[in-house]
Length: 295
Ligand SMILES: Nc1ncnc2c1ncn2[C@@H]1O[C@H](COP(=O)(O)OP(=O)(O)OP(=O)(O)O)[C@@H](O)[C@H]1O
Image (cartoon, rainbow, N blue to C red; front, side, top):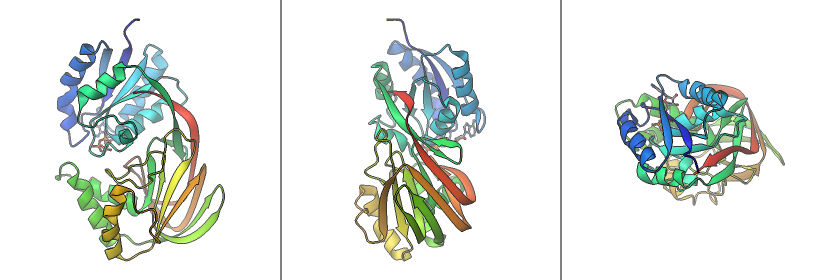
């Protein structure tokens, strides 16, 4: 069998620039495992989308490897829409939430590449929010405020960023009155946080939608009602274990469509990156088996 030709799209900026140092090791390991790879490094926000579009148009590759975190994967997926080209993952990000659904080990480049070399293909679902693809999830409200706060913490490293951002958001975010429509119901409720998951882990390891499967054709939704700041702090450890779903303040739903209207704008993150500081209308759908992955 001829060697697989793979385009590696690496974001040197991932995990506070730590990813930049990994490029030589990644290329050496790809070669070690018999893969023919070419490295493309992103130079600016949005560049991974352009590079992925170019790879699809070239018609010269057997696949793309996303070397970065969830934001990089999101940009690449948005450049690959409609393509059959398989996507693989070398997790180099801060949260690396999406790959937790794949058992691809974070911080272990050798194991990630060994797994790519086994050449197993899978079809997975993608979500779409207001004409933009997502692979892992959308966070609305407090969850998105966490992403906005995390962006501001330029000097803090690793997982600590998310812990500080979560605590700051719990102290400052005000719940909104939302109108939500799913496949089966219409809800009018004061909501602190709404998470719409294709994957199950969000915000750096919080297992917010623990029943999520990336190939089941449905979105899992977690709605958290208005609650006291103390109960939010108390419950956050339960969210890490996914045992929050039975709490009275939590509503879990499954749906293929999710619409939201809010008079007061809500902050939104998509795959962990800030999408908007204030949206009044959100339209989310699931596109079953929209992406081929090689993992
Ligand atoms: N050369 C670059 N300089 C600055 N920002 C970049 C560059 N290339 C890409 N980016 C932006 O960096 C963002 C964050 O990258 P990424 O998600 O890979 O890392 P992370 O935030 O550390 O990880 P995670 O999302 O898993 O927590 C991407 O959404 C992308 O827009």
